[in-house]
Length: 195
Image 1 (cartoon, one colour):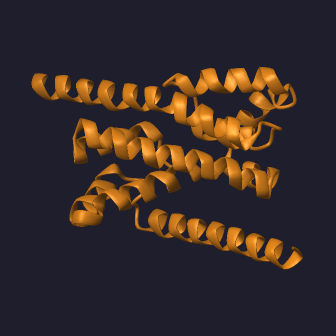
Image 2 (cartoon, rainbow, N blue to C red; image 1 turned 30 degrees about the horizontal axis):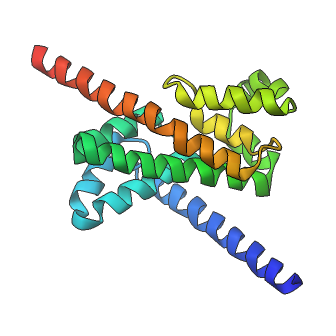
């Protein structure tokens, strides 16, 4: 049992190292800080474009360098409304779950490295209030203006069961992504018509 636990721990650390390495490479090449560069990479990747986009979306959730709303809109412009929504939903959901699990294993060190201190201070008092935090978290995930990526990481510091977290993400996330995808796409189309 002990050796399987060590193997599991080692594979988790290797996975985290791969994610961090990819995030650094993407950041250095401006892929995570420029929607235009992200679009260029995904469009030139052909059949691999959706997989690359989903991977970038996962990394963007774990290391929020640019606002998630920007990448959500980029997906709609690259893949169209339906597939943009699908790829966003897959990437953001997997990224949210990964961020939660990373914080569960690494703890506050990761949170303090990624989340601004003022944000942590703002929500810290909710973390020890189990059921109240869970309800507020679900409501916040439903709202398109909430800082979802940071909240998913903070949720990793609570006693929320993984299964409950996954269900909240699976059931509540599509509505936010749909609002961003369709709302921002409509806004961009209106702006383009009047320019």
